[in-house]
Image 1 (tube, rainbow, N blue to C red):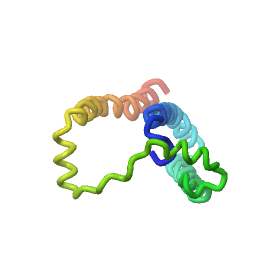
Image 2 (spheres, one colour):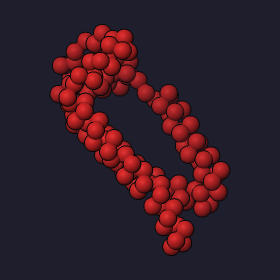
Image 3 (cartoon, one colour):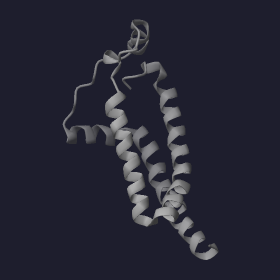
Image 4 (cartoon, one colour):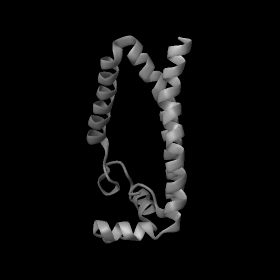
Amino acid sequence: GEWFPKSERPVAAGWAGVGFSIGAMLAPPIIYFAHASFGWQGAFMFTGVLALLWVILWWAFYHNPEQHPNLSRDELAFIKQDNEPAPVKLPFLTALKTVSKNKRFYGIAIPAFMAEPAWAVLSFWVPLYLAKEHG
């Protein structure tokens, strides 16, 4: 949230969700190509190298808004316009009790918990079945 004012965070989170979905669609064919070209060990190496490259680029180029060399004062003011101070960090058990009393948490957690098995089947077992049965 440090790069978006509070009023813009839902839009940013929505676009992040779009990016996650696109990544989930692109990953299987990329991994299949890597596996077909280099074997399963090569597929692991390929994804590991991509992850390492991402980390290096992130460390090299990421800055928080206050330290970014190309961010104007107006842009920083826009980002900080309706931000609240950082909340006090609660002990783990206190935070767990607080979350467990929130009905909104269950409104998100239960559907996600129910959808994960279907997503896992579609992501892992269906491609294996199709490759084995239909080449």
